[in-house]
Image (tube, rainbow, N blue to C red; front, side):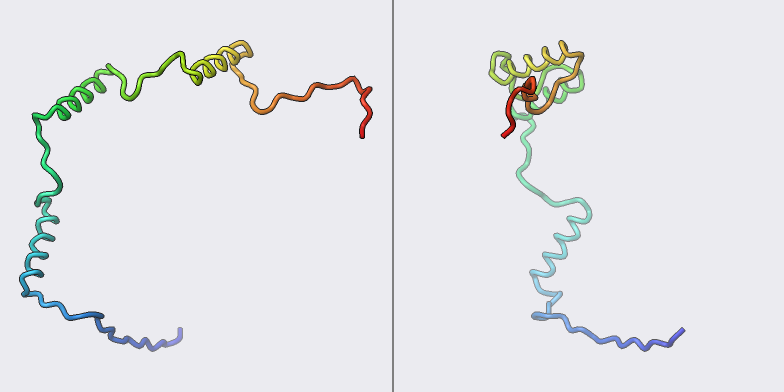
Length: 115
């Protein structure tokens, strides 16, 4: 193996030097420590007696029990639902398969003249 000389150059930190004893740096260090320990306030506190929290609690209970649906109810008379029902009926009549794409052009008897 070859002996390779590695030259290590010292890189100076850019910017102004930081005073670790300044009030700001002390406060930032305390906040970082609190964050690391899982403490400190973040965001607005939750009101456990609010209407929204009661609704969320009921949704969670219903989800566990398998009751109630989430989201907007389906309108069975909408154009989309009618189209989907028609496609489903068509699929059932065709053995569960739906033909995809554009319909095939009608086959002629060969009497047409090719241009």
